[in-house]
Image 1 (spheres, one colour):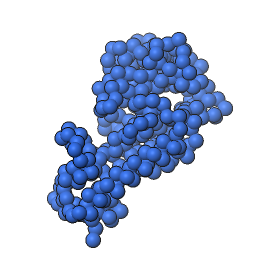
Image 2 (cartoon, helix red, strand yellow):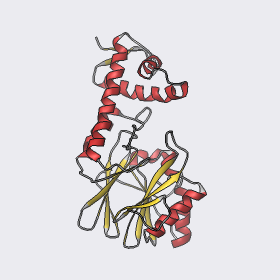
Image 3 (tube, rainbow, N blue to C red):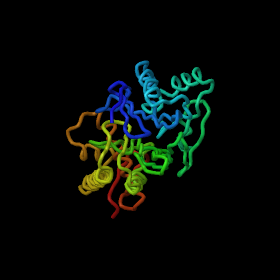
Image 4 (cartoon, rainbow, N blue to C red):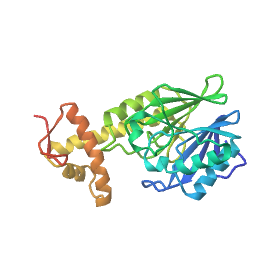
Amino acid sequence: MSTGAPADIVRVSAHLWSVRLPCDTLPPYDHVNAYVVAGGGVAVVVDPGSNRPEAQAMLRAALTAAGARLLKGIALTHTHPDHVDGVPPLAAYEADRNGTAPPLLVHAAEAGNLPDRNVTYLADGRVLTVGDATMTALHTPGHSPGHLTFVVAGPAGEVEAALVGDLAVATGSVWVGLPEGDVSAYLATLERVAAIGAPLLAPGHGALIENPVRRLQELAAHRREREAQVLAALAVGSATAAEITRRVYPGHPDAVLALAEQTVLAHLVKLMREMKVVHLGDDHRGPYALRG
């Protein structure tokens, strides 16, 4: 659903606008999707992840397009830099406009990564009223410990979309790696979000997801396939984390392998909890082996 706003600002549903902001993030992306939830002249911005002047101008234009005279809060799915870097200038803009900077709305498990400002911690199931709309915060860990999903609904309770941050993308996969990633939690989160029955998932990067259940099932299958590859890499004998990574990601450059190793380590943590793998070394480098 388009509006008269710039092309990178799209009205997704009755109470939801998306804003594609240029930012520094992991490839293949060069942007983050911020969202404006608005109704009755009140708004909450979700994940204003870019402090570039052009990105801040786009956020202000999106608030105008949504008819938002008051920014009630700045909500964060999580606190990775590409989702929070735009918080200070956006808060300053609202303070200049209405005299008060809006609070940050975030899960307490993300507290250590927050800028020093007014924070409201959201527990699982917390409902925020935004004009005649609501946002329900769901704790959806896996990508990060305090990751939140926001379910946007209209005045009759009809679900319009779920804002899923870095839980899902329309193509490819998301980062689930140490030190913050938890594969077991991620798989449980995928099941929980699928059960919401949202007609649309609005991710932190890339296109909207119009087939939520199928896509979440695909992401879960990808994680299970990666786990099977880790087990297969150990079936030929004990190996360090780096050696397992090279077996699972053959032919990739060192820059990719460095990130991939953190994903492999997250899978190894899950497998050790399940008593399928043992750690033979003195630190995270291993070696590791299948449990005999």
